[in-house]
Length: 348
Ligand code: PEP
Ligand code: MN
Image (cartoon, rainbow, N blue to C red):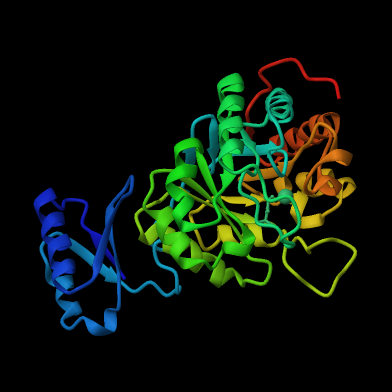
C-alpha cells in the first residue's frame, strides 16, 4: 500500500502518519520524491484492522493499493529511476555503468593489469571473484580474503570501484570491508538469510537472477534487500536455463524493458555468463545497450586461455576495448552516457 501525502503536508503530519502505520503493526518507508512524499507501507495488511483510517489522517492525499507482489521495488511506489552510485561506478537513469574484470582474482599481476586495461577502455568498476561458488567442489574456489586484499590493491592503483561476490551471510562483514558493490550470485538469489544480511550493510548490491527464477521471484529477492534497509540494488540478468544447448545459458534481453516497466531499480546485463562463449559476448553486449540496459558486467582476462575459471567466456584486453567502442556507439544512439576513457588504450 502507498500513502500519498499532500504537497502541503507538514513534517509533523508525515511523522504522525509513520507512527500510525507502525501502530498497526506495519512497516513504513518514506520515499521523498521530487513532486511528493509517499509512505510505502509493507507487512501483512490482512492482519491490520482499521487500515482504512489512514486515509483520514491530516496531510494525506490518497491511499493506493500496490498491485504487484513486490512493493518497494515497484514503480508504483517510486516512479523515478534509482541511480546506484558506488565510488567510480554510476548505474541507472541516463548513466550506463560498466563492470569488467576476471571471473576470479588469481594473483596481483593479473588483477592489477586487468584493472588498468578495463579502466583504460572505459569500465567504471572492476569485477573479480574472491569467494567463488563453483559447480564442482574440486574446481578453484577463489583466494578468499587474500583475493579481497588484491582487489584493494587494484582499487588503490586505478581508483576503480570493486565488485565482488559474497556467498555466505557470515562473510558479509568481511567482504563489505573491501568491496564497493556486493555481488549476490545466481546460485544464491533465493538465499534469504544472505539477502537480509546484505540489506543491513551500506554497500551497493548486484543481485544476479537465478537461472531458473521467474522475474517475479527475482524482484521479490530484491525486495528482501530493500526491506532490510538497503535501497542501492542493481538487478542483473545473467541468462536462464532452457532446453537450448548451443549457449551456456539463454540470455533473454526482453528482461530489460520488461523490468524497466515494473521497477525503478537499474538493470544490468551479463553477456559473459549469459552466452558462455567469448565470440558471442561483443554482439550481446551491444544488443543489451540497444535494449536499454543500465549497466553491463563483462568477464575480461589478460590470458583467457589460462584463466582459472570461465576463460572460455572471457574477453582479452583488445577484445574488450573493441566491445566498449561498439557499446559506446550504441549508447549514444539510445541516449545513454558512458564514461569517457581516461587513459590511452592498452595493447593486448
Ligand atoms: C560470476 O560472476 O563469476 C558468477 C559466478 O556469476 P553467476 O552467479 O551469474 O553464475
Ligand atoms: Mn564467472
